[in-house]
Image (cartoon, rainbow, N blue to C red):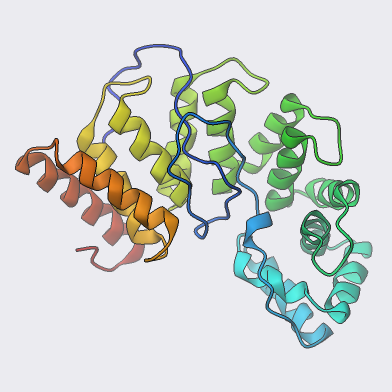
Length: 284
């Protein structure tokens, strides 16, 4: 399988163009279409669902499932009832990092508890100190946004870096950090490398960001084939009627009008190869 194109060389040290304007969740939320705006970091907050639980047994199952692997975002909403809040708080007090992170999300969102950024930070911090990668990332978001703590891009970058060992939203956030020079020198090459790592995990906001970067040639030689490929993958992974799908579709239409049949065929081959490798199904 031919790998997706990477930049041949960087052209300048200027900041790249961001496409994320809303909070996002792994493999779920879609980026907005606007570019050139102040970025909002990727967190787990937007993953919360309002689906109620039926008691502590449901929450026990939730925590057990969450312990299998981080990023089971769809399960967060099961903390909506008082019984679940009580059970999660009990587990958090007893030291469960998954429950501590869960409780932090609930305080950040005001889900089942009074919204309280300071308490959210406290629980994220307790979970992060136990190497919970989602909590490390979300603690970085709180520092970057100055929620519940004094704003510190330096501390945000440190927590993103800790979570980026395997968590796609944190990898994306490091891309934003180096793209815009938030607490670090602006570094387009490192920003692109982090976006690529997140995109290779199927993180849709990173895929859409790469589509915009390659299409515009921001900090690199323009590559319409790579741009179209990443947009096609982002569209395929987005909700069919969602904003992310519509944005990717518009980007693909604009790119397609400037590409030769050979280029279009190459982009479709690259997208098909990537999709089959990661999903074991056909894209087209």
